[in-house]
Length: 222
Image (tube, rainbow, N blue to C red; front, top):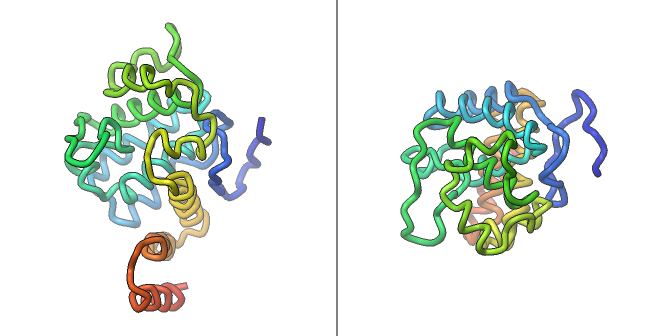
């Protein structure tokens, strides 16, 4: 068991964080970041974040990790998968060219992601559980059980190679989450977004010249 968060303490997301844990962060901070950085389908982002912070704690999941994963997967809610399908975390997209399922609203998108994360973190959703009414929203629930994923990922790091094939998946989620909450804590959302984009460039195969220009740009924005 990890220690309980202290009120007002900045949220730092780490790959070693356990998915099941006390809630961290505040929905109003996530929404302030979203509104200041130009997310797509803002009304659905609002519904998504509100539902994450309502439902995830009922399931024992840390909502900070849920929104961190979604921020990473959707490029801070600007990706085509979010814009066109309200897919919060690559759900049901098992390879290149595989079409995304579609959710009708931000709240249902949150419920589907939380069900799938709970399955990975704790196992199958039992009857009478707060998540039981939402299992049908997860398009890969039965497939994940058949693949032996139930209860196989107690930590963020354990999602690597299971939820996604990217070997740096957990680090990417952690970086996105820390950027999200650091921007909220500082009240400087533009700077946080710039640094997030810079980190994405730094971890890419961009040319050294582009990396130098990005580094200079971020240094001037600090």
